[in-house]
Length: 193
Image 1 (cartoon, rainbow, N blue to C red):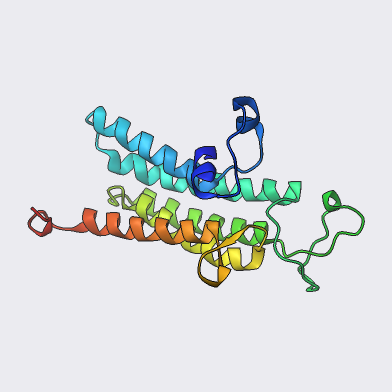
Image 2 (image 1 turned 90 degrees about the horizontal axis):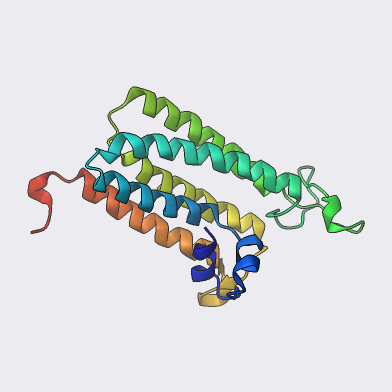
């Protein structure tokens, strides 16, 4: 997950290994990608059918991320933009003059928890053949893309500097997940030669 931040955040810099591992800037999406790739490779190497394991892992990733966002809220990190709404929260870790901020971490936690409930039900029903992992990447990247409009605590990048680095990454993740989903759902005669 740290490597993911280093690759996609132009403001980050490589540090000594002990600082690199202990520093802020971890990415849940990057961690999930790393776990997915390494797990998929292991399952293919071991000649096991990766589908059922990937479906269970997708649900587990959602639950882990939902709980992790509650941790972000408790730590006061990853908060939303300043707001005067009744939903706004003042974090004591931001000092006595802290402004109210939208609790985007809790919004995301609720979103991820809802997805977990849906995915868990689908895992129990069976038959997804690993497609839940692609659905996980599509749903979480879309959710993060939209919620980042409420955050604005990251560096913006691109045309008119309208999207954050995380949002560009979410767009790329979504496109790749859709392509992989489509590839997996093709019948054998539809695959390009």
